[in-house]
Amino acid sequence: MNRVEVTEKIIAKKVAKDLKWADIAKKVGLSKEWVTAACLGQMTLTADQADIVGDFFDLTSEERQWL
Image 1 (tube, rainbow, N blue to C red):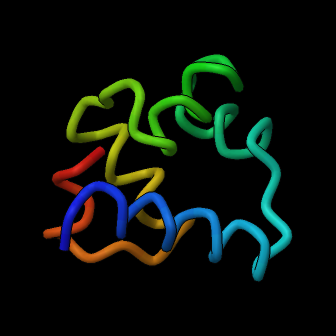
Image 2: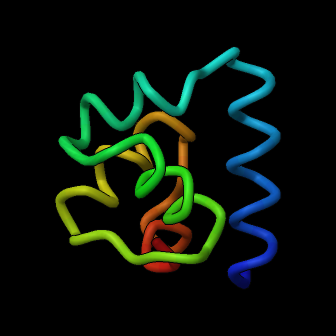
């Protein structure tokens, strides 16, 4: 698994689950822009933040490491 694959999975899960970046950001405690960038591989999250995001997108522990 690499960063591109994780990003593709996140996008697919977001569409399939009809998730909104703003809803995810609210749970993480960061701005919608920051969370979106992190999910798309442009920023990083703390381990706790990555766990929250990982739960939204059903990411494995290996996949969460890319956040």
